[in-house]
Length: 480
Figure 1 (cartoon, rainbow, N blue to C red):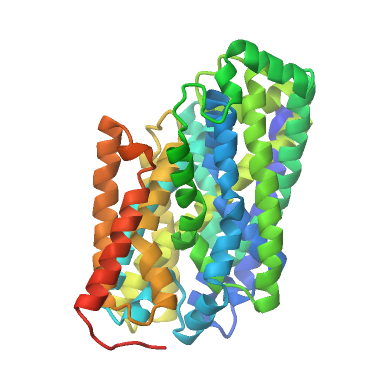
Figure 2: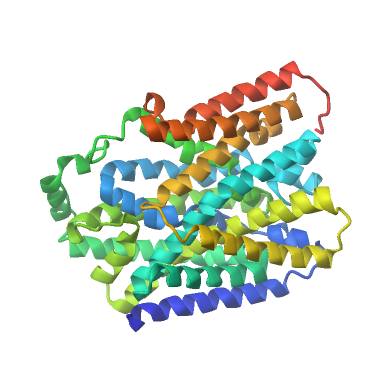
């Protein structure tokens, strides 16, 4: 165990705990526990909003799985990853003012709150909660695995022990601080990501003898590594184009991103976040994925792609600097998993318990129930993460696709098409989820249908279902 590497990470975790404690003291306000714990009192400024979106989206798949896949596939995956640059821009542009205004009007704390009131339907709320719980467990498991593998690589501990340390670290500050702790620490973590990725990129370029030497090494090994089509030619034009739906436009439907579009302070904050978030996302994604492919000549033969970043940092940087740099993927993982924990917790406490079981529950009861549910969820995900997959990025992307297929049209059309109703929303969600899961298993067995990403057809099917059922079963219950 290298103390020089571990010390900066320990300092980072202590700082995160301190932020959680300070944030918990700020939760006592006239806006109530739910507004504060799950939305930070809707008081996020532009910089914090941008960084919390970047940090939430920049997860274990971006900082460990993404570079690991670039290491394996080549420059084609770097090109694929850069389609994510517009993520924050699309979320705030499409949802932006209208979503925040209506969320305040409906007193919505979660996306499910918004959908329940917009469609005046408990069935929509229940379906939404089911979708969030099913698909976000996959996403949370990916983050737990990433955190465990990172600590395992750094400390030499067994994976199970490393996973336990990570789980405790996250649970303590999420349970204590809620959304405000998540948002504030995301701002810190986002800054660490920017600095850490830049330092590591410079380090790997120097270790590889410069960019021309690295490129020549890649060409000598396999010329396909420097093409847009991947080392095995699997990245076809159809797949790359459709992948943009998953990590670009479709991200607007991810509940963990959408909730941030209802948490900002004012329009100026939202506009500032648009600019900052887009620039920072592009910078981080390009750096991380270039690091992955540039690492191949420097550290050949890594068997588990998700370990590329920690092993590379330990190889090309001094121990103390490696510890600081590796706080970046730790920051990315923690900031995503805390957001997902709160999202699933809010779906259970706010959208199921308070809506359908005990609407008149006292705030103290809700407070302790929220703490308890968040803790229990963390334990469940810890158990699921004990048997990790080879490349966790695909577990995370499975979650993304399922949530997008379920939510994109009920959210977007619910905002912009007044004829959309609960029948269209229910049909769209069921069609999206069922077709996505079925097509996922079909593609796993027989290869991608027509060469496009799994999410493509379910999004088309769910759109048709939304329009058809809204028009076929007309019922005026518009709230605009």
